[in-house]
Image 1 (tube, helix red, strand yellow):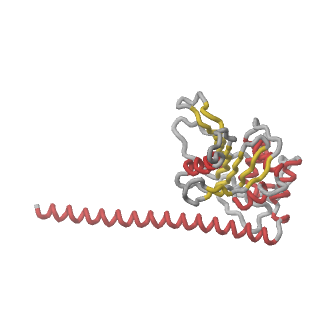
Image 2 (cartoon, rainbow, N blue to C red):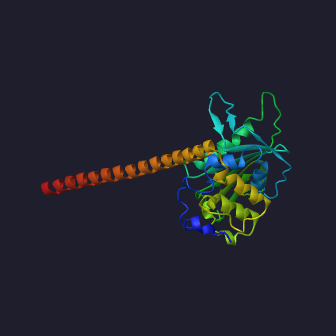
Image 3 (cartoon, rainbow, N blue to C red):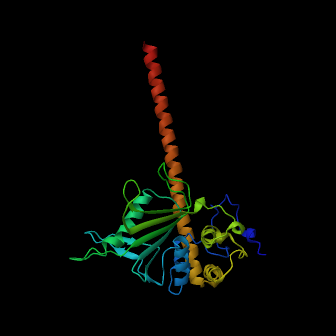
Length: 284
């Protein structure tokens, strides 16, 4: 039996950074995700991933399309997706991976998902739209409303205020909050759970666990193995990791500095107010 724990941090320590020595790529880095799931010849891996999340979706085949969508407005802003593909029935599927939460994440998801909708209608075109589905694998917990029940996967579409009648299913969002997935590999029973485990923990593995067997996982582990990367691909992967780590460190440093400055200003203001009040009392 493969000792998969040999190179794994404890379950509570998902924040362990991937390193140059890891055998497998971290699938939640967009550079690795695109390489493993989004290149020509990897269609079966992407189909398996989508069907694990949406098992009722009938997928005959898919085609990768440009991951850049131009804006239809007067500005030149573009939306760049991790992987964008089109199913045989015309459905657009956008798959994103996100390491850290960001300001207005839900608004960002809505903007990105709406772009392929608006781009389908040209001058004088009919409003017969192909569906757009956005699937996002997240390494953080979303902020939901008070009536939301804790779960790993949340599926949204446009409904009436009471949530009974669907206005349209042409725009859907599926969020997988991997922070909420805590099963160990030997406890994973379904194909969906096994894929979630790989998305969250694969880069920590020293070898392939017995529970992750079968043709699909044969292909997945082969595609994610850093030994199968060219020197150029591996260096690009390392640089992408370093770049994302630097950005996160800069944000973390900015927050710490902001907190310190705010604390210092508050302390100085408190001292000033205290002295002022003391002087006023002394005069009375």
